[in-house]
Image 1 (spheres, rainbow, N blue to C red):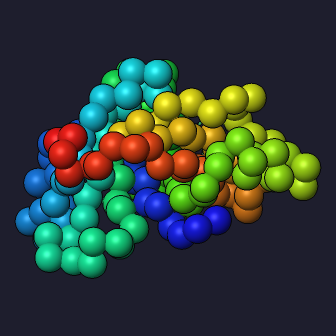
Image 2: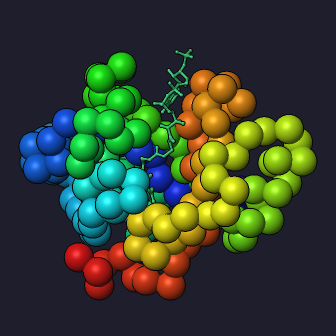
Length: 145
Ligand code: MC0
């Protein structure tokens, strides 16, 4: 693991959550996108005048009730849904974790935020925390939004 990439928070309404985080904590969106496959509309937030290398806060709103975020909201309500780590090579890290006996959710990495490649460790194998592995894409978040 290189660093904490982002912490993902499930929210019912992305626009309301964006307004709340900006007004309350001074966090602003540097990137926003819809990921149909994951069933989310999401935004990556940073402190307005913060350290550019800081970990991001990700707000995740469901596109459909039967999506991962829709189910999470139903079961637990809004709150922290995932902890994401930056890795150099998601295939390699996934293989290492599988070899340690952890269940990875996907056989092969899928597309994440801003062209990243992602996989997840099942929360039951990681102390009750859904762990996301993120191999960053080539896209600069800020130019994308
Ligand atoms: C479920 N459980 C969790 C959990 N989700 N525990 C901690 N954190 C979570 N987020 C627990 C349940 O409470 C249950 O515990 C057990 O895991 C099995 O639940 P399940 O019925 O299988 O739950 P499902 O159907 O909701 O599936 C959970 C699973 C799913 C993690 C497999 O959410 C999934 O596939 N997630 C990966 C994709 C994802 O999260 N996409 C949205 C973010 P008990 O004790 O009751 O048995 S997209 C994203 O993040 C991208 C855009 C990006 O960053 O680039």
